[in-house]
Length: 164
Image (tube, rainbow, N blue to C red; front, side, top):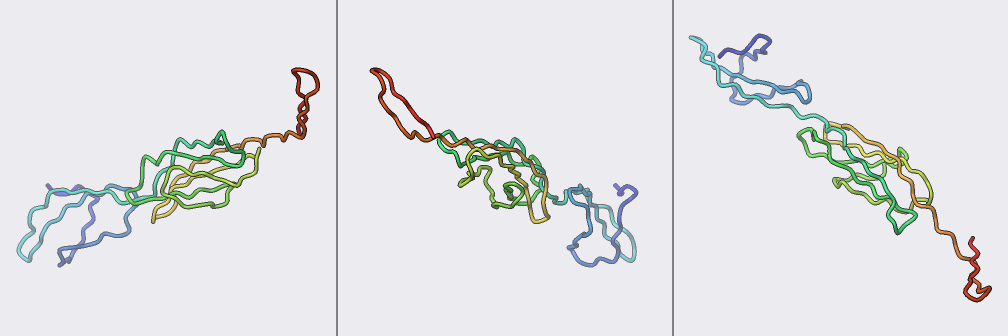
């Protein structure tokens, strides 16, 4: 079967291998080949197709929460992008828009934060072609526990507690 109109012809190729460059990311291309001699053109090969690589999509399902036992920590987890771009990819984690770490995990524990503070967390997916999509959320660390400055027995069956 002859290729449809819009096909690109590469003439004068004498090698058994060729690289097509300048293609569009994430586009499916269909390839047919034929041999041509000085006498005639041969039949077309069967149609083959493949899709070029692209940047990954956005991570999803971002969750940011403080653990129950700490006031200066946030746990961040997310789901990998549905479209990975066809290449190995990794994540950049940004805290208040500052790059914090590079990871290939979908879980990060952020420590040494300030208690009772709101943090903006962005997770972006990257591969060798560049940045794909990202997802952003807000996390709030737990407030610090008050300190007990005094605990005094005042009456039978009573305690007076003073907090600071």
